Length: 346
Image (cartoon, rainbow, N blue to C red; front, top):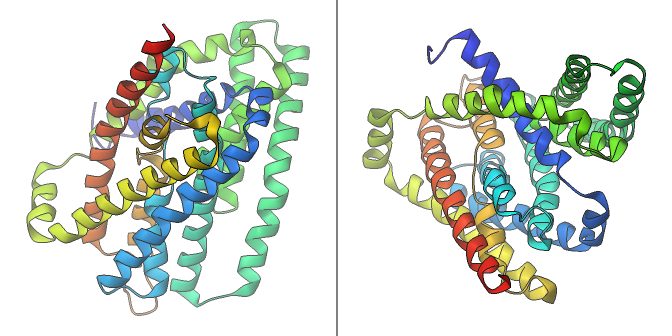
């Protein structure tokens, strides 16, 4: 296994998409509809609060409004890394978990929209036409996936899905096409895979047709995704960032934790049914991974006419530290709070 090898890169990319596909597939739409208002409220808060905190912090460290908005979007999204933990504990249909999963749709799509907009402004200046184009593309893409992808998968499986390997192939194609469609409109592929999972679940209503793909994914592809993420850990580089620019690291971490847990606390105060779930919601929405890394790397590689990157290397390194810490602390706290909430019921 080579860190920059083509094989591990391919497996990890596919694992990332399939991880988000099964997160979407596990959503019970009838239960999700019951928590729609909670999900929308939490989605707006868990997107807005970290975004504002990150933006203000970046402004304080010398960035302009465009770069500061990009920094805010970096910590506004989240990855449902603790999903397998909740699956094992039987918490997937808990109202707090459904609320958090619903909020993921808002955070990931919005953060990718901010990335596309800030990249465009950095390269060519602000364009109303570009903004309107992105909004129109999104308005077409989301319904197309939610209704079209599920329909295609159901018809293809009904006609050709007699054998397990054929069903696996059909689902892989649907996931890949939805992910590529997201990339085509400047969104991260995980958004397309997540929506594809929701669409397929809505169309099939059963897990029988995806069992073989799930086994293969959890055996090979998803572990490869986590393995490749671990490859990003460079102790020398991290130490240089911590010692050389500690305020950036501390500021991003503080903005992330404060924004996510404050959003969870406000949501639980607004909706009495969620009382006592602040820790679970906040910790589940804490991990930063796929969208965060993609945003930071793309922003660093984006140069304006003067050859200046949208995001300097110091912030990229600090983002990596945030990713590592949040991906370790988040699932641990999620397991802790879930077990505490389960104990009285038992």
